[in-house]
Image (tube, rainbow, N blue to C red; front, side):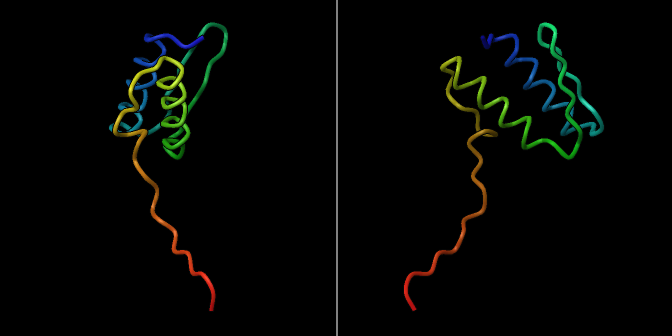
Length: 75
């Protein structure tokens, strides 16, 4: 079950990851997750899942859109 403390910790970890780089460790109960500088998208997805389960409006970071794809019909 997601809690506000878990969401706060994940947001702080994302901030640390983006400002300092390197590794960030999160520990929830008996489970430990490690995010590398190459994994900010996974950490954002985790934050989005926590926000959704808590009914919190999604943050701007989790709402960021990926680049559009060009679709061509016919021809």
